[in-house]
Length: 290
Image (cartoon, rainbow, N blue to C red; front, side, top):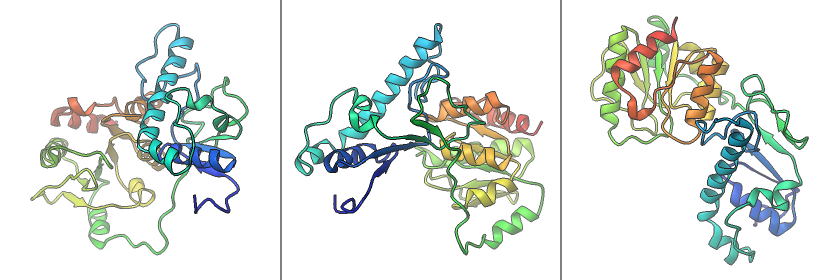
């Protein structure tokens, strides 16, 4: 509330949806929704959390899947903050359902940060809804790539990048070993991103580099294939880099983006994490360079 005291409007995406809407409601400010996944119902494609719900008649099943997706998003957003909404903001308890139909969500533009070349804007969206193109972050000012990474990239053909972003792993060493076995089977080099997923290995061969976090805008155009979880941001960065994806979706919107990359011809058939094996991953990596 203090930070918004001099604000003219509130902009929020999925992560700040509940807080943003509640503060906008309390202060009487315009509330602009800004997402990198589609949440506006349409008959053109299914909801991002239910991409399999594409049954005849699709005009009905697709809209149903969007309604269910929005309800899941709202429930996840409001559960943690409803007490603060009532005790701090002195507002009524958040509605259990139908929040996206409330006035605070209906007055202002809805912005979608994905490319219309990847996911065209549906004709049945109203004029408030804008597909703006991807929202990328540039390489940080003054950032210098680590020497060992530059040397590795220059020492041979473009490696395969393996990284699962923020997806947690119950057995990170086993997942890393699976990836290394797949790379060995293909005879290719690899950069394995340790990252939040905890991917690590005590010992790796000379043609594999285990590293930390690097700007996607710098690294991804320099690799030969990208094995990733299919998050909206990583998918966008891979498409921008012009490098084929091997998507291993875990949950959420990842199966949606994984399926879309395959449909567009910029990625292999997604391999759900529960079905991932070294053999399947090696086959997908080989397919990615054809």
